[in-house]
Length: 423
Image 1 (tube, rainbow, N blue to C red):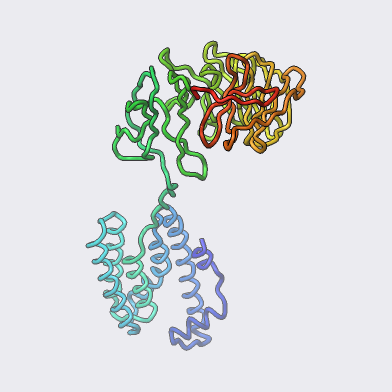
Image 2 (cartoon, rainbow, N blue to C red):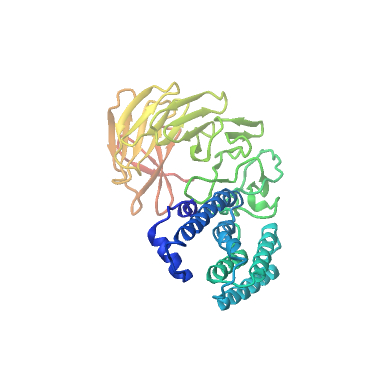
């Protein structure tokens, strides 16, 4: 478009003066109209040529046609004239153009565009040599055209900008039953050429699970392993289905979808709870699913599920810990003291024990009233409280220590601790 605008510039006194000076023409009152007419005719012809060359260049993405249109008017008007100038420049440019064309023919594939450029180079060369005498504009125009024919090539489309990781090639997938989960091994290769390489799969006891998605790809990041969670009783797993992209629960009785189709960015964190009966899916809230009835309850704003049994659910938001029943109704709420605290709900749902990380204390709450009943700091000699394990049959609370990894039964009212013989 810029070349077309240049060709359409109006004729000025400065351009006429420059033309007659370069052409070494003496201007008189008798030849001035002829000189102006000649210059105007060349301008009109160049504008017409450029009007054709611009759309052709746009369609072919080849800039050679702009050079040809600009210089062809000079070549056609001067091919019969007699004025010897700039012969050395022409011969040097022609030699460079021939050498360049030969190099490209030897090193690159022969294309239709390259053949067209060679034909133009030969035609321009023949036109210049057919002139009985040559002048400056003829030599320079011919030199520009042969060099353009040799070295200008059609523009190539910009190659697709691939991210560091791209989608793997599709490959055949199968199905593996899940009966018992002893050992789970994750995928270890992101993309490989082997279609059935076992490193692409989640594996249970060495057997690949091709129905489980191995990786998730989120915007702006590297692939991360998709969730694949085994239940504590080693009888079930939860994963992202490779085909339909649903969170799926699978056991020896078969597979059951837990969600609708998800994008990789929507995949939640999954955990088993309540002796493997329940599955908690957490992302911008929690969804608790009973795997015996497939009933579910949604708790908004929850960031983590701590404990879960038939009596209720212990979950935390950014600021509070709450106990919720399986209908989604809040039974109790208390502020979060530390993100490292752990929580245990008694099987009957009447007591909540908070295992404090900072003070190694045990706080017992009445779930019905939300009132704290007891605050004790049990002592374990030189060891420290690590985590709560739940309740013993006699009603005492079981905990595990840090250093010796021992199990103690603690009286929540007095803090008295007794080491269990088989911890």
